[in-house]
Image 1 (cartoon, helix red, strand yellow):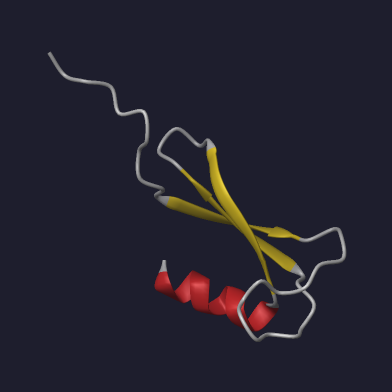
Image 2 (cartoon, one colour; image 1 turned 180 degrees about the vertical axis):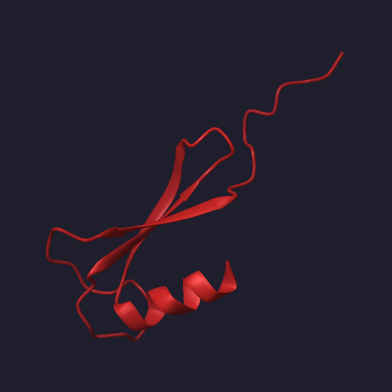
Length: 64
């Protein structure tokens, strides 16, 4: 009998506009975050999010 996977690996990254004031969460970056990268699992449920500046968000998009 197959066992349910309660912690599926995140597979999708969605990019949202940051509608609040926050600093980029990359270590050493002093820019303002204007985008949010959100990881979701196979079912579309939220797993993790991080606020990023445009430059660092482009790196995430390229890697995915």
